[in-house]
Length: 167
Image 1 (cartoon, rainbow, N blue to C red):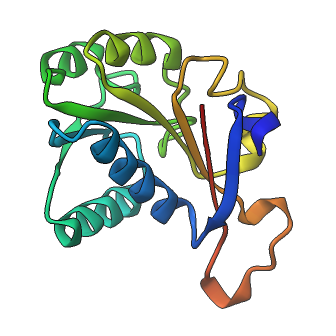
Image 2: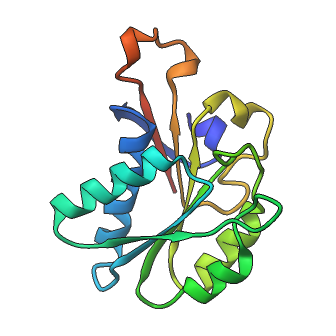
């Protein structure tokens, strides 16, 4: 997992990719206790976004805000820049996205870091990371993924295996 994601510390003990993303959002809020917003690209699987919203509701702190996609299917860079502020704990982006597009992860990571926010890459198909530059190489602080395709049996629809890696 550390090799695939390009970051140093890895775990695979989460229920699935969606819960891994939710844990990344919680970690960002803990790292930045004065911040309350989690920006999630509309290119992240909609069920993942719902899981994060549910986790934050139970946590009692934090709010999810969607960043729209541009006409080309990538995260809208202008909308992301307008949404960024000193109250954003993390920017989460699909890598590749739910619609199959490869966002400019280095540019997103640079924009997020410029506002002190963590960048979280979200991968729903871990095998795709064998073909892409690693999230860590692209500047992501946290990389989460669904690892079911790495060899876990389908198990009648769940659970999968959530991968989580960070610097």
